[in-house]
Amino acid sequence: MKNFFKKTEKQTLNTKPKKMKVRTVGTRNKTVTFLWILLIGSLAFGIYKNFTAIDQHTVHEREIIETQMIDTNAIESFTKNFVKDYYTWQNKKDSIEQRAEKINNYLTEDLQALNTDTVRDDIPTSSSVSGIDIWSVTPENDNTYAVVYSVDQKIMEDKNSEMVRSTYRILLHQDNVGNLVIIQNPTLWSMPNKSDYEPQQPESNGTVDSDIVQEVTEFLETFFTFYPTATEQELDYYVKNNALPPIGKDYLFSELVNPVFQTIDNQIKVRVTVKYIDEATKAAHFSQYILTLEKDTNWMIVE
Image 1 (cartoon, rainbow, N blue to C red):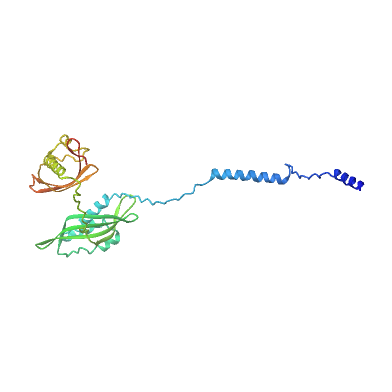
Image 2 (cartoon, rainbow, N blue to C red):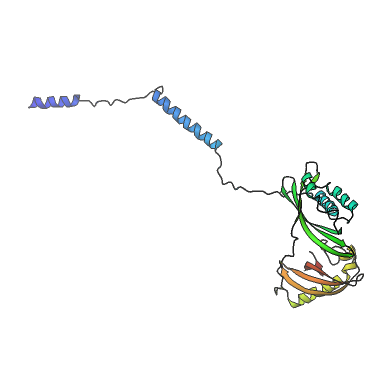
């Protein structure tokens, strides 16, 4: 037994822990190289995206409509000259032939042929133009314009005469150098009528007390009494910022008609009609004003 324990103890003492093998990967290994390349590539890509990123935002499209100014002077003059020649004739052969020659200067060849018989040699009437109104000139398409006009004619037959007013529409073409030609014959049209629009009438809103109303009323009566003949220097005592220009007219002040007073931003807004008598014609004249007044030492018209 003694020997057994000794042997066991010996074996125990001689038993040493085994070393664990650690596997090292060298920096030159292909796997490490690949990982470094991947890391550097990811970093470079991130930096590139940061500098080349496109800001995304909502784009609001806005349509801009530019108003093109059209010089209609030539079109209106051409139309008026045509109207005068087209609606003027005498019941004489020479006059009718002259009319035909004149209107050919405005019409295409097709329209010249169409208008050959508009005024016949045996027509019993004569016509003269006493008035022309151009109501509208509107573009139809490229270089083509529609013109609506009215013409006042004095129609005479034997010893009788009457005034006739008619409205027509024509089409004109204007070429690149500004020359004009009528491409559609005068066609019966309607004349603009009176609109039924009525603006809302302002009312006093009770923001101006009675003492202020009386002061402003007296100021306006004084001002409009001398205003028609006041010089620019005299207006400086009553008017700022050239709110009212000198007019230099011989008008006699009569009264203020239906003045309306409102307080807006420590100023007095006045809408008023001023009745004058024109000393030359003896007729009444009503001028309408929208004025802004303020008081420093005295009342002044500032707008």
